[in-house]
Image 1 (spheres, helix red, strand yellow):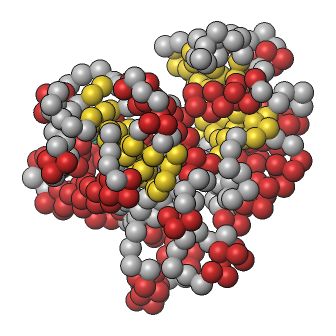
Image 2 (cartoon, protein in one colour; image 1 turned 90 degrees about the vertical axis):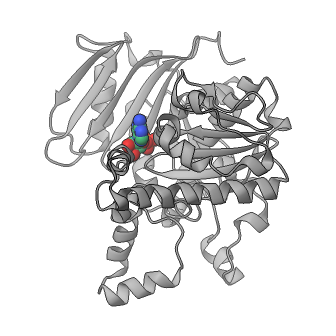
Length: 403
Ligand code: AMP
């Protein structure tokens, strides 16, 4: 359905000090080139990029997003590794935007009103939306004739029922500040939903899925009839599972307790909960699951405890989502840990037998991706489905421009 139409899409994911990009040819959904601008505004800034199997690095001062995007555009169409003759060949730019609040329930073409809307959401995503916006505004200046499209990380979750997104706080706070569960990783959950349905030979509208996006950031989503009906991340991406460095859900009274006893300001405690907690804080080893897993396998008790606590929470979310959907057709693992760690998947899948679900040991440990890792007689299928947020963004651009 997506292939065959000639279209080149530049996908941009602007973080506070980085820009990730891919140029895709939508005729066959192939990646023409991809790269990463790192350490924007810091010492040692550079652009790393790849054309085919060859990798290149440009080291130079990159003061801001504007300079970073200008450099990327230059590399695309000038010099020895150019992949297009002119910037006119880029049909559309797709921007990953972290937070669309309740304003953006789907992908939109950027105009002045959309920019105002993204600005309004800065109050609920102060770390992410300004960088996303800088990317959009820079492209509007540098390639003004090319359409810009915004794809929101929160949009896939916007159909959650109200009972799933309200917190037990005074209703006024919801009205005044938009305090509610939003959920993130929406582009990934949506891509994995579509891909899983394709692999199962069914329509997403007919399926109940639990998708475990387990990476440095991690979230579990209940997807019923093609829509997210609940998800573990909340008002911010700090909620839900224990993650690489994020604490996930904790007793809210702990925030005040830690501030008082560790003599921290609001900024400090937020940095602590976002950057020093999770698997890093529990294990004392690393935020990288591979390092922690290696130590756990060698017998380090704290490392094993950290992974056990993480996997236990994943299990709890899966169980509650099966309950709220009144069933499940497939359990799906994606992202760095979900796709690559048989050790974690095995821990998550130890207690599934009451709903007739069986992980196949051999399939869990070996094979290409995507693949089914449940036994043939398992009532519920278990899959590994690699996520591809960039492709999902490019497909959204194509879908919207095709309208
Ligand atoms: P992501 O945020 O999706 O890029 O995932 C990054 C995380 O995946 C890091 O913590 C990695 O350590 C973890 N990861 C990647 N490969 C493996 C692996 N083979 N085993 C365990 N964890 C892995």
